[in-house]
Image 1 (tube, rainbow, N blue to C red):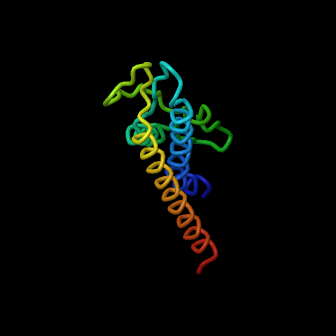
Image 2: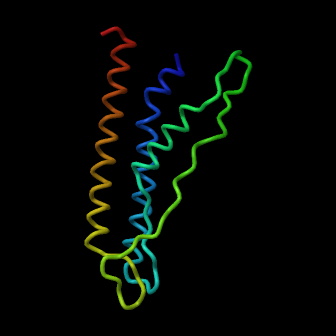
Image 3: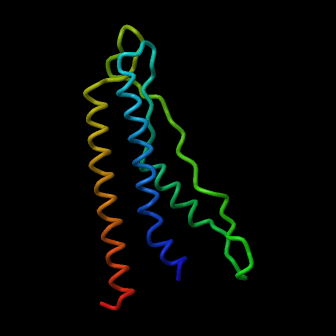
Length: 132
């Protein structure tokens, strides 16, 4: 039963992990907007999430309760890539403040949506367990 709960909640939890990591990366970009030669970084959320889903499907099957689950620990975070600026600055910094604030806001909104989906899923599971 616990494996079913894990499979139900795993996509929501992975999305929250990736969104939180992306918030940190984007906040780092914003914090270094005035740092000479700083290169803005980011990752493709959609590719990272689909890769995490694909990796989750490749887990080992347990044929005995005494077997280890085969998980090697939490999945790693995606590789960061450098962003190519539309209009590079003279000092070599590639952070474009307006675009970065927009990305940060969009990611925060999507984080909240992921949190809402996870909350609804937990409520539905609780109702099903309680038989309501």
